[in-house]
Image (tube, rainbow, N blue to C red; front, side, top):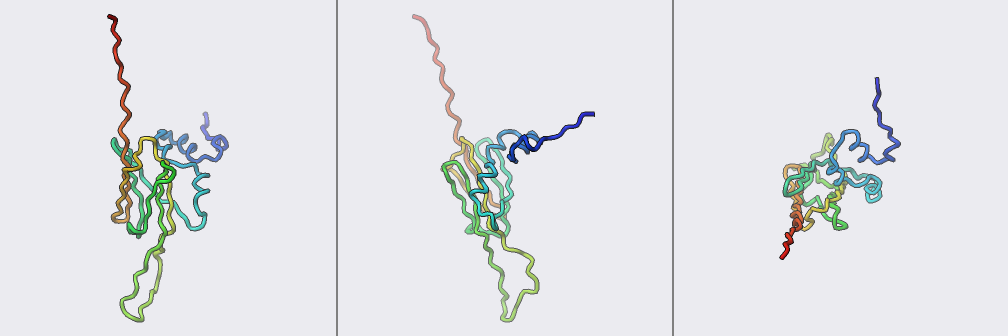
Length: 162
């Protein structure tokens, strides 16, 4: 009986490579991931959490769906850095509902305000960074990044002898 195992040392700590190897994910998924060491260098390790995301590769656009419960569109900033890195961040502030009457106090506080959120995505070469739209509705942030049209195929000219 042969036993299959993955030697973790072969990936040198690169989580994206390990996951792709184990699940045989297509390489297109890898182009959206930043190396974990680079992401940690640019993030404050205290109180910053990652935003869960689903990424749809549609024929004319990339669509990102992120859960951001309790945040409004004013709480979320979407920017493009270094011409190809999409950055989504939030300050993590939520106002508590104050008691309507004087003398009211909370008996229990279980809902925590969201932490500071930060997520970076390396956009592929065919992403049109000047055509990005964002919408926040019902606790879901939807980002749409249009794709650039494919480059025209070289035209072949038939050479004739005269």
